[in-house]
Length: 141
Image (tube, rainbow, N blue to C red):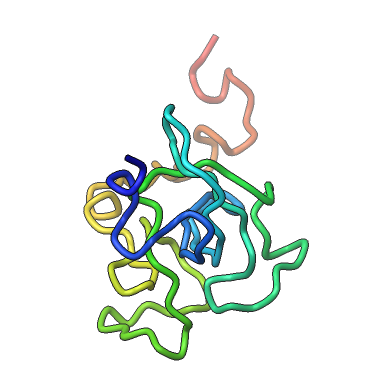
């Protein structure tokens, strides 16, 4: 049945903490689980408020009012004042990989540790590449 597809403490029609993309980052939101479908991702949620239980605004809301998410992106809703937060995660935002077991978003784990920083362009000496000098000055041509 659908119960085996849901995280412990999450039920259809109930509040949950759901993770989705917002402004290019994964963030958690208070949501209602609307239904479960056979295909993946299986769980349809409707976003209600921010993770800190503040009303959604045009800047704080996800791009869509509803979204299908996986079970790994859901946990039971726990009001912010009742959350135990041993990890020190700030409710003001930040990257998150999904809701934690006590209703808080957790920080990214291994993915961030292995992520390579983008290469940065370092300008060479005057007259070198990137200085605006023509190709002949760089020995090209």
